[in-house]
Amino acid sequence: MPDTAARIALICEDDQKKDQAELLAARLAIPVLAEKDNCDFLLAVTGDRLELRQSGARTPGPVFVDFTSGTLRYRRQFGGGRKEALARAVGLKANRCPSVLDATAGLGRDSFILASLGCRVLLVERSAIIAALLEDGLARTVRDPELAAIVARMQIIHADCLTLDHLAPSPDVIYLDPMYPHRSKSALVKKEMRLVRALVGDDSDASQLLDWALGQKVARVVVKRPQGAPTLDDRKPAFVINGKNSRFDIYLPR
Image 1 (cartoon, rainbow, N blue to C red):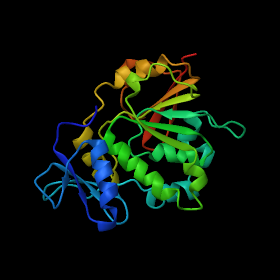
Image 2: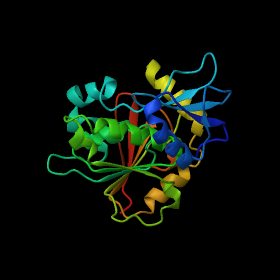
Image 3: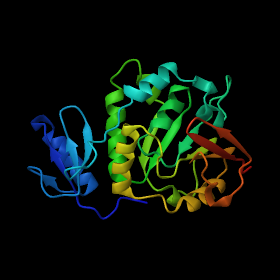
């Protein structure tokens, strides 16, 4: 679902970025606050990055897009590479790097891994706020010489895929990761997903997204699901690839 009706405003914590913050607020059609106020969410322009914060004493900490450290850095350097489940799910082989449309981009982690393995990835995100976080994350990452070539293979657009009738050029793969309750024990995942879900809600139209994807001229559609969950809309996939905590249901529309 798109952003909820929650009250959201922007706050700038870096005087040198006030003009940038005002332009961003105007683009997102949200007010700029001089100081913290009683809003449900704050989009904060800090000296280092763009952060999403939720108000309240026991709410999760800030969420931001970081492709350079933590889990993604470890996974990029020491993960399974083209042998890991995500790579096999999109059909990545030694001599083939399919182009991928990530129709539910979110915080962009799977897209970044695919781009690090050589895929060109179009990230489509219908939440304007999440799309802004993604854009900020890419802008910071491109300054890292080691990662610049990876993010050059990533493009972000703020759109709802259900409004995109014809894809030109058509990607090889459409990737769907609808919002569902995470059961991971990772505190970071719980924090991020709790806050993102509070802002955008669940993807209650995931079945429509699958219908849309299957109607496109692509070689395969990949749906990420939690282990043990039913198939999306009870549709039987052509085959399944299992990962550690998730599985990938693969559909072959052609």
